[in-house]
Amino acid sequence: MGIASSLSRRVSQELSGYWLFDLISAFADNPYWTVTGVAERMNVAFTTAQRVVERLESSGILACTGDSRRNRVYCAKAILDILEEPARLAG
Image (spheres, rainbow, N blue to C red):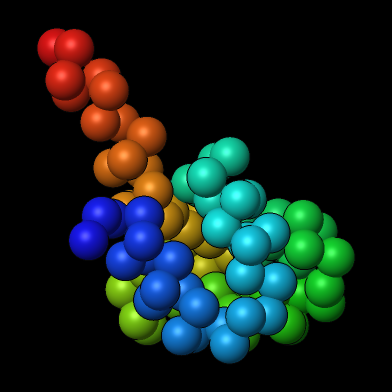
């Protein structure tokens, strides 16, 4: 099973299908997001986006990239790995 299908399965378990496709597409477009960015992209309240990001972080799907208290940036590491794979193969 590939990384993308594994990630999709794990995300769907976390979100119960709730704007799943749009969220995966957002992280495929850019694997780095803030909660505010997720809320704006998904057109949901900040607190809704915050709960989803926290759940995805606790399950290991997202990781916080720094130690700031505000405007934290989260990364979907599995998607970033997929996007970086062609560069690793070429180099």
